[in-house]
Length: 200
Image (cartoon, rainbow, N blue to C red; front, side, top):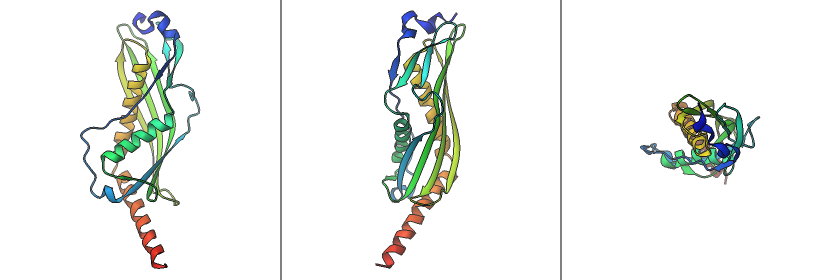
């Protein structure tokens, strides 16, 4: 049992893997091109800061580390930018500011009789605010990605974490309050700019 998950010496060799995010079937949000949005990502993890998973042997014991090729904050920030860009938002400073704090970004492997499982967990805290102002929106997101596996590899950990991040972002962009906050933050900035110009 679980021999397929260890593969001998492979469980003793660290993996370094990339993680990317792609969207499909997304349409532009009306008026998004008039809203400037900037994204900042912050690493708020309190554990597993040096890795995103660990290989396991046939008994479920942790073996070699699986590390991310790059920074977790860069992966999450790029995921948000991809989602925003696909919907037509203008990616620039001076409008709405999204801050995303990464609380968890980790995959856990579980061994099984015929197959194992990869469980990706991505927990985020997202706020939206006009630049330099108080937040209009705050939400904690819990993304989960699960897939059956035969090998506890970096590739499978990356796939589960990619699915977990996609799950969290799908919930975020499906929240009408988040979309409204982006619109309101842009509107507040536009009003502020027009008031400033009236004193010139």
